Length: 218
Image (tube, rainbow, N blue to C red; front, side, top):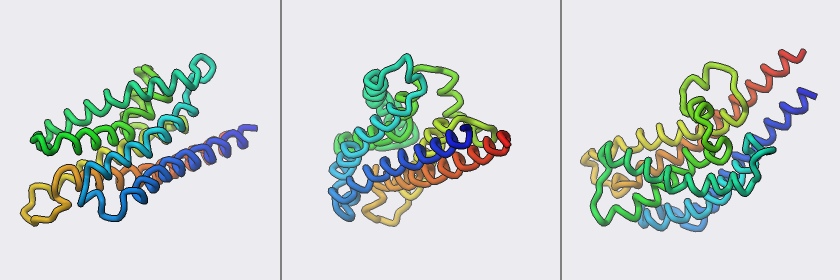
């Protein structure tokens, strides 16, 4: 019975990440190749529009307190956290040197909303306001100790998106004079790439977790 549960959790994690990837792929298809460089606001808006309902629906379904929290309440938590997380991401980006000119406002808003979907919204849908769960998810120690499947599913993509955005910002001050060096193009590429890598890492962590559970059961 325990083995069946671990198999189910692994399949759930894979399906959830596949759906999130499908949202990104759909947005890329609608925007067209190179849209993030030629029209960042449009490309980021499509990413948010395609990804938001999937992320909120998937992680609301995976909510931890399913008996005491309806899926509608979990969805509401995700919707409330979306602009809050966007504000925190935008604030952090500006503190780290993102431009604040009027022409950057719209792209920055959409980029911040996308980052909120990658970072804060999944945890809000699954955990609500649980301080301990938020600390566990945001901590790097999650990679060095046994954890729940949901923690791996949320933490690795979140950390990957943040790290990817940070690394993606490195070329911005260089004098290469390439169009993709403009804010927030390179950090968006980095965030999406980091998010995808994080999803792959989380699948590996879930597989390792399942193997560990089976070993204990045997």
